[in-house]
Amino acid sequence: MTLDASDAPGPDAPDPVDDAERERALRAGLADYELDEADLALLEGGDDDDEHGGADAAWPVLAVVGRPNVGKSTLVNRILGRREAVVEDKPGVTRDRVSYPAEWAGREFTLVDTGGWEVDVAGIDARVAEQAEVAISLADAVVFVVDATVGSTDTDERVVRLLRRSGKPVVLAANKVDGPRGEAEAAELWSLGLGQPYPVSALHGRGTGDLLDAAMDALPEVTAHGRAPVRGPRRVALVGRPNVGKSSLLNKVLGAERVVVDATAGTTRDPVDELVELKGVPYVFVDTAGIRRRVHQTSGADFYASLRTQAAIEKAEVAVVLLDASEPMTEQDTRVIQQVVDAGRALVIAYNKWDLMDEDRRPYLEREIEKELVQIRWAPRVNVSARTGWHTDRLVPALERSLDSWDTRIPTGRLNAFLGELVAAHPHPLRGGKQPRILFATQAATRPPRFVVFATGFLEPQYRRFIERRLREAFGFEGTPIQVAVRVREKRKR
Image (cartoon, rainbow, N blue to C red; front, side, top):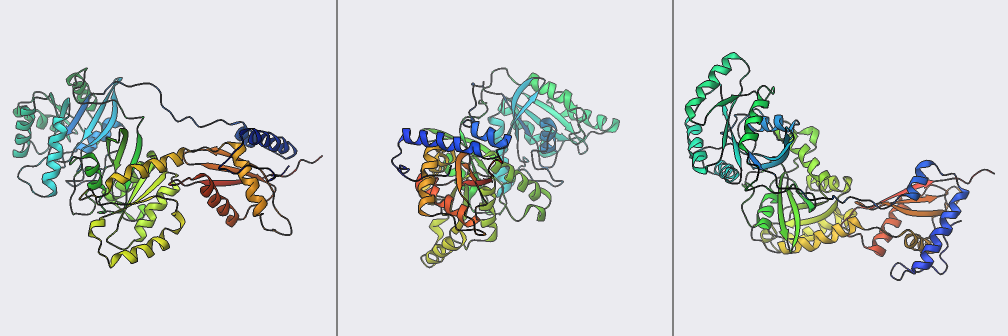
């Protein structure tokens, strides 16, 4: 049985009874065709269920601090059991304070990696040091990492004074201890007055178990600063090429200098998660490293930062791609957008630095939009200035529209009624003297919406794009990619 457009209600005025009858009739007609187990499972499948149940208690917070290049991020990776923090054999790779969920001996806690703490520095190094100080103030306990091969330095002494003023429990980690000689060097760190130094090798894992046991003893049972792990709020990734203003936008949304911002391109290295409530709705915003070029063309810290940005996109539900309105679009910009679309995430395009754009630039920008973004006209666009906060309030409605579309499910009867009208008005062109017929359609998934069409023959790519375009016109789907797959099925042989 093929789709019949007679008496089919339009998508704006569906008749539930007619839609249900049409669905039953069309599904019965599929019995005449060869269907495999995957087809039957799809036809019997229910709605996606992505909700997380249950409430979690707040986790205590353990911050890892120390001067640059003592191995803090390497130790963080060792504790996590995976390469999460960006590591490179040079100082200053980590810049923001970055939180990770962690577990040791059955106890869950939040582990915070920080940038290197230095004294009497200016510019970006001063802001990195400020973030480390904030991390100490928001921690329940601190692991202070010192390079045992170098010994105590003047900077280490200054950090010790800072830690004493904070009043937080401190566990001293003497890192880079790989043998008996290192044990003796670690013992010299008793002079810092922080109690027993725990000799460890973050690189090889030596001694980290004893260190973590001590850290668990130092962490209080009831946290004064932690919060429950975030599972419910929608995750928003801020992505774009370097220096388009991602960190500035996050700081403006939060109303605080949460992320290190500097005119130097590529300031952010690790994804930074932050919970924020906008118009009464909680979101987790994730600031990411700027995508410079194709991943295989990067090296060192930039390589791992690119991998983490890709992972942040895949873990997010919606991505805000920031473009610099004051400059021409680049290949990097379009590649970032394509990454989001390929990952199947909801999308919002934000033109930042609107306050820096002069009138001569405006007509060129409109032409760029028409040329470069022709394939994603469905994405909502907002014009903002992260520096001044202009129009940042328009970001939330755009996020809501994109997420609503990302979650949308069309009832099967209504979907087939819509396709019946579409096919009757615009049939598929003849192909090899035959005309493929659409037998039945169903929405296989949401997040993003994915539709499966059963047909008697191959549907041309142009016709699939035509179906996608009409689906958007009829049902919205603003801000989300949608996928239309075709399964060609033949009649059963009698």
